[in-house]
Length: 442
Image (cartoon, rainbow, N blue to C red; front, top):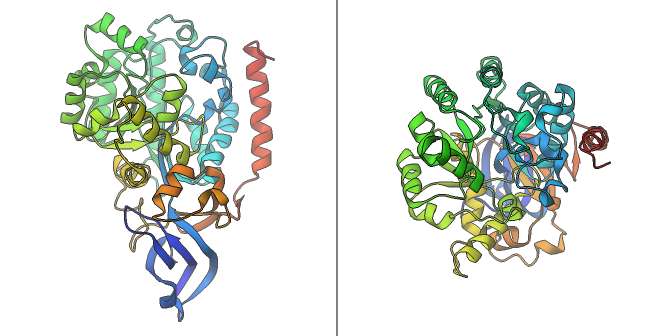
């Protein structure tokens, strides 16, 4: 058989199956056509061949909660507050121009790609700049805006002041994005609706988002119960929990992804379960803020869980093991779930949350070839026993050697082939220097 690409002699780790040693993968157009022991490829030819050298080969990660422009606060906000929008004296989204948003987004998306993420959700202010960045980097991306009607100029100081003008502007920006890009032939870019949170969107705005989303069968991605301040604020205004507010507004459904979900009571968990919404677990970012989501309670309610890094890190390996660690801490040392579970959340469940599980998330015949290959010489990836344990408990984004996305090699031997990484780093640093000078730290 003739292929566009053959990945030769790899050890395949995919979807809870036993490690498949000394296998090869045949790709034609953008699809995985053949996954067999390497000896079965002796008569096959290809336009190009990628030598696996017995490296671990796995599906690309589905990283489904990010705001790439807030790369600008990494390494600083972690010691100042739980999220930039609520933290004074750090760069804010409304400070950043369209061009600066693009330059920062390139850095965030580039890091995710070279760390093994092949599909990401990215939503923030100025979403057209996010689209421009994702086209340059080449990721499979679900892009949205940051819909909110609480005045961002006052929010970081703790003042909640509603602006109908801001609500209309941010909603219309997200709708314009959807109308221009969602149904394009470019299969790598889709759009989502991105209402920010229950405390930063009025009930009327949430309802407007829900109605538009249901009408056009769109994914809705939002934050939920990411802080006690959010919970207290919503209860003060509406005499409801944030979950009750989102549910009453029509936000919750099987096409909704809820990020964080830290401060939930039993009734809220039951509401989420009934709605069939997905939860995007952000263990690393939450733990940095001293918070742990009740993931065991969510699992007990049969709520599907996926996992994300939330931009300030791009390392899904780190996120997977942190999810295991914080769950054991929260549950008095009980071993709640294992490496295979987390691997599934980072691949199959992530794809399912985005409605693309028939296309990506596994290495199997008929799926799109979104594949990563790890460093076969990395000492932290030895010894290999079942594969899952060493990848989840010891792996690193820096172990990613090659990335195949949509059937095309776009990172080879650690080098991105579509963009100049050093140029992206330099441009983002210049933007951050200006922002942090404005914030009074330089």
